[in-house]
Picture (cartoon, each protein chain N blue to C red):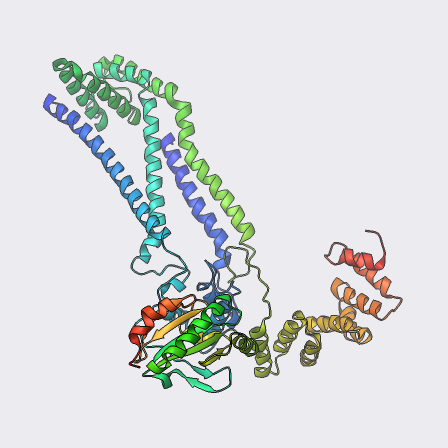
Length: 413
Length: 195
């Protein structure tokens, strides 16, 4: 395999690697989720709509009241059966295309989509040409020029010389004729000689078959030698720089993408780090309350409402909702844990112990219920609280709550 | 193929070809630079947050609901009057500056068929009533819009924003930010009826 073919192959390999690894990183985020809830569909539409009061944020991430109202409108329309396109049209009819985070694929919008890849391609072509031209001076090194002059003085007689070499020879003859007529044409001779040297560099002429060309074989050997010796190390480095850099880029990109994006659940936002827990504001609580009224048999609706009230600090209001969720689904671990913790905080530790009991019996090595039971026992001033809390520290010594628990128990870390 | 004339032609053709290629490259670069300069220059001068409303010269969207006093209100009942729909909220600082301007306009131009209708966006009724009391009362009704649904259906970007409707119910103008007496004189006065 010639060096040229190896370089071309390496370049192609680099291109394939970049594309493949980029795809590997993005693929998990693009896979459609198996179970699509209304909330997931709404979030998918919300991430494409711009918040009107913020710069560059989607309404999924914005905390402004307008964004909250838009989210409500999106969910309302999707629940009523509208398609994402129809929902977006509703907003573009009132806010213009500006409300979409992606520029529209219409009219001038196409320019925004096509210009970056087109310019990138143009840039790559320029780089390729620059690299080719940079290799030329080595072709015009003194040795190569001398070899070219020798070649021109006695060119081989075989008829199948490469076309650029023939053209170079012709140009050189013409230049020499002009220089004879006009001394200022000497620069043209040097140019022609350089072009002949370049032509020989690109299309090496092998030894001629005819016997009288033994000297030509010697001259061609000189040319070959000059090519090999004069230019090899720098040329090799320059040629391999681009494919190696591309492979390095592809490798790093693939590794980074796999680490940051590969672990996201399907359907999640592909990039960025928006981990905003929903802050239950007034409208949010009302919506959750409506949820319990619309689905009175769904323990998750009661649990969601109770959790929101709990986070908002309204423990008294949260308690009956937790009990409702637990009554509907006695096996619901989250409802049991949260109700138990609420009762402990609210001053009923003994009842909390009764509620939490089944959790520790069912899963004795799960640290969180152990912690809750320990804190409830401590609230009830039971002596076994210290033992239970020490057991929690044994099960989960590195948890965020561990230092606090150690302080409670009185052990040194 | 290898006559001197052809050779000469080959040589003399190459230099113009090279300079032509260089000129082409330079021209392309200059064109790109020019386009970039024009786009950037035009863009820097604009405020990215101000987008001209697409509802101008279109019929007004529906507006109906309960006012802060509990009475029902429908925008269609004001057809034939020049209407200013003002989106505001008690938590909005610029709305404090704007309220006296609107109250004065309602007082002066009520006889010339001006009707101001407020839309109280994302607000608690108690806070809104307290705001109005602080500002000395309101001489025009405001519809409660706790979830911003009315504001969104009107393409509102934020508060305060004001829409000017003519007697036929078409939106003629939109003010983003607090309304000033200058704006009212320039845009509202020409549409008003005879005293």
